Length: 357
Image (cartoon, rainbow, N blue to C red; front, side, top):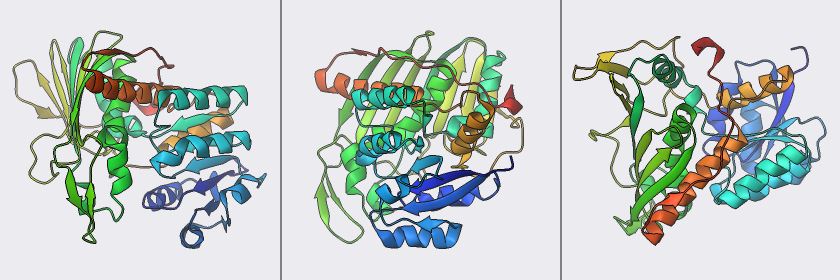
């Protein structure tokens, strides 16, 4: 790969350093620059990771040398920003979710296809070593026919750690973090066909780290039952209330006729993984290769770039991301209306990583 693939970072908030640091080991990917609504943040990013600090997003998109834009803007901006990038002729990898409605997410997938561009979206944690190991074991029949998954997302109170919690609560825990295990289980179990949801506000009146009160209008506790096309069922629990520390409910459990798999985290690539035959105690399982410690944020972009260069499909796709948005929208519609809601969309199944096949 003699010519580095040039990427632009759009949005230089909290997550941008995680991306910047995890691009460093890949010489075939070059950070050409960054832009942010706060120019000082873009300047700080390029000072650490190199490239040009563009004064505006438009200036970055006008640079013909940039092949792909990594969109790290806030949730509410994703649809318009991705649309702008695609119209500028750039491939796009976006932070999650792809959009806040399925209509918008589907429109972005269509636009990318019409313009002959690649579109991908986080979360990419299904590409992690432990997650891929669990998927490989399920494919190989280690737990027999898989029929049930439990996904736990107890994500604490955003105001405990984030300086600007209100946008997270406006979106809610389902769209902010429920998207992670939903992407893992749809990669493994396939698309959803019906969901049933429950949602409520547990803790309506909150206070920021600076002592400013704010009130919740969006559910901070949501449960979804997802019925997959292949017959498996996922129960998803999400909230912005229960703390991480001391909480006994974590990660993902997969249950089949012959046994169970327990993944301590759907997020970390090095999370403990345990396997049990039916009715027997769990025992640790080694991942198929030494895992990355934590989450390698760049992994989906790296796979996407290598897919473009090789002319193969990337593993994280806009189509799967749009399907996950439809699931989340359907869960919300279900708990609002009080009945199950059908899910119609589909996506090409992602290939396992080469090292886990």
